[in-house]
Image 1: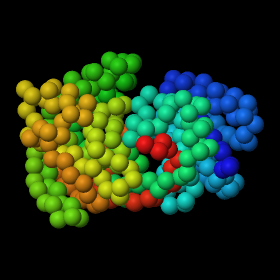
Image 2 (image 1 turned 90 degrees about the vertical axis):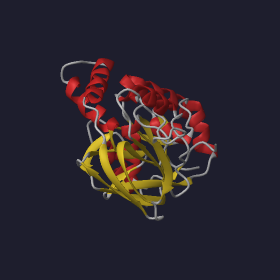
Image 3 (image 1 turned 45 degrees about the vertical axis):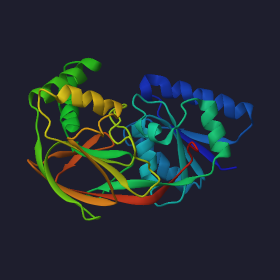
Length: 294
C-alpha cells in the first residue's frame, strides 16, 4: 500500500474542499488506513508542502482542492516518478474532466487503493510548465477583463461584464504556426489552444479529443470569426461541438511555435503570464498519476 499523504486547500470551492477532506478522513479512519496530511494556508504554500512531502519520502501525494491546488502539487512532481492523485473539489475541476476523476471521496479512495500509477504527459509554454491547457486569444482577453471587473463586482457579474467587454473589443490575431511534424500555416485567429487535457475555464470543451496519455497536444485554432457569428461559435466551443466548423483547424503535435501580431498574453492552466511568440512542447510521461481507468 502506498504511503498516502494528503495536501488540502480548505478554501477551495468555497469550503467544499474542507468538507470533502473531512469525509475522506472518516473513511480512512473507518478502514484503518494509515495516512498523513498537511493544510495549505497561503498562496504558494501547496508547493512548499509538496516539496516537504517529497523530502519526507511519501510514496503518493494526493491533492484535495481545485485546479490551482492540483497544478501546484503536480508541477513539483514532474520527472520525479512519485505518484500523485487528487480529489477534485474546486469550482472548475477541468483536469478532472480529462482524467474522468470522481468527486466522491469514497470512489477516490477506492481508486487510490486499487489503481496503478500511469505515466501522464505535461507541457511547457516557453519553458514554463503546465498540466492541462495553455494558449492565447479571446479566452485570455475575457480573463483579463474579468479580473478588472472583479475589483468592482462580485460573482458571475464580473465574468459576464468581462465577456461583453471582450466581445466589444473583439480581436483577431495574425498568427504564423510551425509544427515539429511539418505543418505550416497562417491565419487570423480568435483562439489558439494547446490541450493536454480537454477542458478549461470551468468546463469549456476546447480540445474534446485530447488525452494526457498519448505524448501529443491536441491543438485548436479558431480563425476568421465575425462579430455576427461569434455567439454561435462560442456556444459550440463551450460544448465541444466546434470541430466540424470550417473556421476551426484541429490537429495534434508534440511541439509547435506560434507568432502573433499583435503580441498576446499567454494563459497556462488559468494563470496569465508570458507573451507570444511562443513554443509549446509536450513532456511525454513526465508525471505518474493515479486516476480512473477509463
